[in-house]
Image 1 (cartoon, helix red, strand yellow):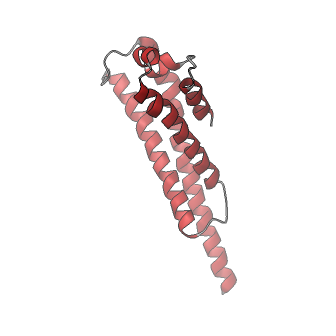
Image 2: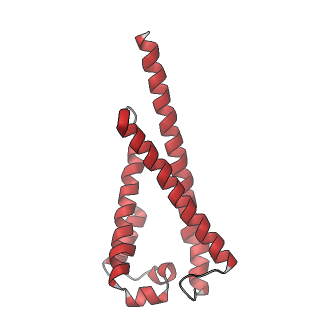
Image 3: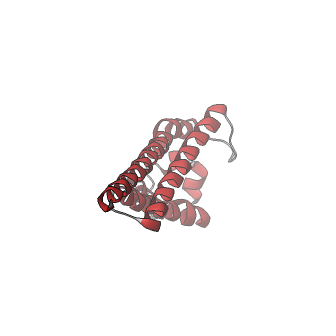
Length: 147
């Protein structure tokens, strides 16, 4: 939810932290595709992620909704870990697909932004794993009651 709020702040014209997050060019020019997809779009994706996280905390979910929630939890885990680790490796290796990356942008990405992606991925993975175990326990309990 915090990342969603930050992206909506930037989409509405806020500037604090945007330059070191997205780069000087994107922060100053704010092309329409960047505002629509990179700010509003990512903000809404963050809200969807928060809804999945809340869903993974629920117990008693069964059937297709259980499978969808668990799959979404694993998918979010994989996405966040891949994004966080891949960008970390690329920045440390000095590879840039977008041109020059400032020292400040590299520093803040390596020390502030990417660790949150990695932590989020690990937490989503643990939540999806726990959610699956909880359902397995419910199934075993239900089977024991019917016998």
